[in-house]
Image 1: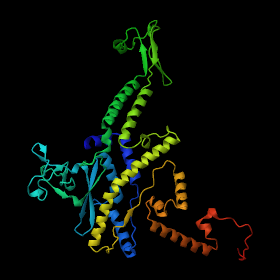
Image 2 (image 1 turned 60 degrees about the horizontal axis):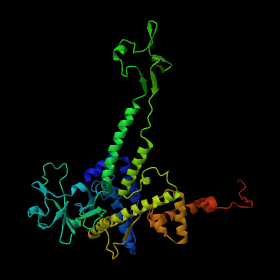
Image 3 (image 1 turned 30 degrees about the vertical axis):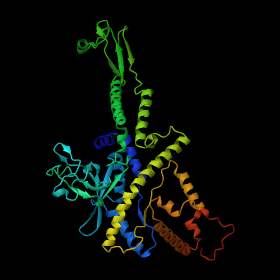
Image 4 (image 1 turned 60 degrees about the vertical axis):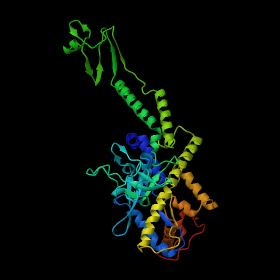
Length: 448
């Protein structure tokens, strides 16, 4: 399933575009951790340290940080079905994350088939006899207790029969299961894999037909019904003659004049492929395939054909799919983050607090097709108390405390500069709300 899903993801712009857009709206530039507890001493130490950790948490470094890791995890859930965050600690005592894609967790082969239980050897000590399915080791309650890491493509010297079991306590699995008994996540692309393959094959065949028709420009009808190569070779081309001189093809002003017999005929080749019926058929299959991904086709395709009610329905469907993705990712993401906080507390980098687990992630703004109207609705919701100020600010990935500090700094700067210039501070902060004075201003400075 992973191979088929990756093939479609890599070969279909509509599929990859929809998956990437879904990740953008579900993760975006948000998911910033914010301490929501009451211990101010803990906040002053933990908040800046964990903000720095989100930029350095990935083992690979570089552009890979907390947000990009979660975005890639969302893409992997649609493309591969699941992915895994392995929690590791550097020799210096810093918590780090190693992300593993779905193909890295699997069951080693014994002979010509995969094992259904863990064998008893030195590599499997503590897990022998337990059932294993798709690389996940379970206990009697079907709880994951371990994950077997397969060798990477570069580990050519390691056999696929080698066991490398990672305890489940060190792994966070990101998946969106459809069954209670699911051992692994299933790619959302795979739900319509037959439709995607049919679409690809049909589109490829139609492309060949269109190319064949595009190569035909003119059609000539003659007595023989075939090309007369012999006469063309000597220059006559099977054309009628006038006296002793044969009529030839002539180029005049970048145009082409073709002389044919009176019994012949020449016409332009016309085609209407791909036709409207074919396009409607392809759209119908594509729409059903997108529903398999839990996304309306207008999310990644042309939405100009649906009216106002259709737009609102589409926005609602997309937002529910995005919120579902955020819900299934929230728990493993928070578990990974709180583990990092605990590691820093254990290393005395962060002081202990009874509410050390009181953290929240900022969520991105909701999916919208009318940002102006939605922004106005957000302002009205804050005024009427339907939504909190921190909730609205958090949609932009901004911590409320930082936002308030910036506003205070802007206010103090505006007051300082306005007092120095002798003008009302409102002219600087909110010039649109300032009413021009109705009386003359008396100038006391003679030079002025």
